[in-house]
Image (cartoon, rainbow over all chains, first blue to last red; front, side, top):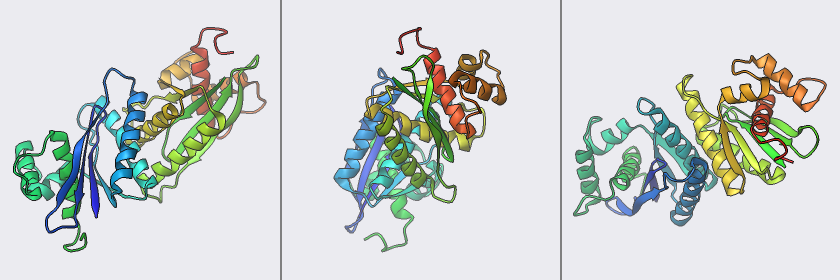
Length: 161
Length: 161
């Protein structure tokens, strides 16, 4: 079964597709969708919608796990992250995937064992959980894989295989 | 030329399509897309995406004018309004429409003449500008028509016909 993790963002939207079918979780695709700050927001959203649709059509994830937007930071960024998350959710449901949101704290808790894990610790844990020799790059892709791994960790043992 | 005004919302999303081709602006369609609070947000967003897509396919507006989300109010509501606005923008651009956002103040200023106009005054002005005998209902539809009329007011005289 494939779980697609999404770290939503308008300038950089991380994605990571994890296969839960083997003995260990395996990242089968991870990367970043970028849109140019020089274009108008509606055009960037439309471009991102197209990319997300292609991604979902290619990997056909059973679940799309999205990092939940929090509002304590920059309002303008939060707004565009909200717009992106809305688009991802609608596209996922339209493609018959299940959609689940996890807070940044839930992701850290599930992947590193505690909610205040640093970026570095998260990257090392993602690397260890995937059994890969060097940290996953770019960082947004690793963040998105962490969201997928968080979803996997939330399932009862054995249910995902 | 058709201008589709959108007052974005997840529970109630107002829309109003205004024809600028005659001597006076004429509302050719106005209404509200509703989604049930009993369903999960991703499903509601997907449902709304489908309805917006149908609306744009039916009326083929040259411009989609959207009321800009402001963040001073309820954060949870602002989040879902942001998600809806992102979906509307992406769908509009995908259908080759132009997308323009107007703040609530711009809409009031353009339609009623001043930024602190009350709901009642706005409704009466929408009614007067459309030359209709009773106020447009439901209110969300009138709000959306006001956004379309705001866009029309921002065009140089004669350009829209």
